[in-house]
Length: 270
Ligand SMILES: Nc1ncnc2c1ncn2[C@@H]1O[C@H](COP(=O)(O)OP(=O)(O)OP(=O)(O)O)[C@@H](O)[C@H]1O
Ligand SMILES: [Mg+2]
Image (cartoon, rainbow, N blue to C red; front, side, top):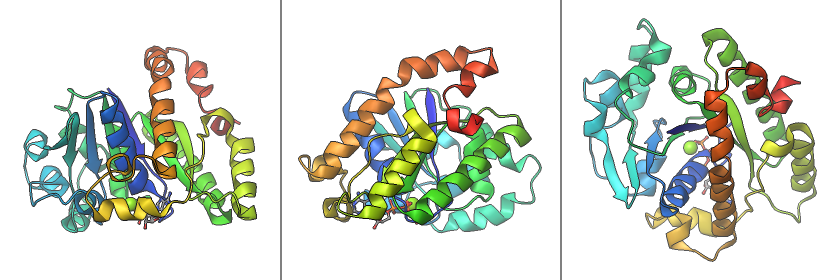
């Protein structure tokens, strides 16, 4: 089971959009996927018009069993939602012992999936520390502009720190350039810079496409809302490249030698 957090402390870089469409795309390829919203903004709940149901807050501090909070969204695709109450939860768990590993303990019963995809909030707060310690992999969406690159370097350092401080081996397995407009010089320069700094873990860019904004308003992923759109093509390629990594990731899980692990994240190792 691959546990991937979609993370960047910078806001508005397409984390939620990527989490939703990656999860939907993987499920359409026959993978069993659990999509988890770690953000009090509740973007996933809104994107799919989910009803009120036990959610992340109830799991973390309300004594609800994680299995009771899972809802089906479609074939091969389940969801755990969040809403604004998650902010309160953040305050409560801040005072708890072993607060960074709460999610890991609460999610112990989750085994029956090929992928768990976590949509993280734009911060480096306690909820994201929990996501870091639960996940084995980080997928980092980065907007193709100057501030995006600055944010990328910061999140790469933060992930390296978490690995050192908590002794948890989370790997950045994919950096996804987002909001790409090839007519824009800054976008092209940013993409070149991201590629030259991070090499093969950089995916093909996701192009700007207004259909992406329309899909959640219709309660759909880009694949069902506009299957021939630019964004559906780009997210389709991302899904395929995540699946293509599977053999390598399995090897890493078995790797005894940390150097083997380092090769997957060459830029972080530099
Ligand atoms: N490829 C795209 N083309 C056009 N608009 C996009 C694209 N990807 C994302 N957007 C839009 O950009 C905005 C931010 O996207 P999103 O909510 O996914 O970012 P986020 O990183 O999750 O934000 P936050 O940090 O607030 O959680 C949204 O309005 C979304 O519809
Ligand atoms: Mg978001």
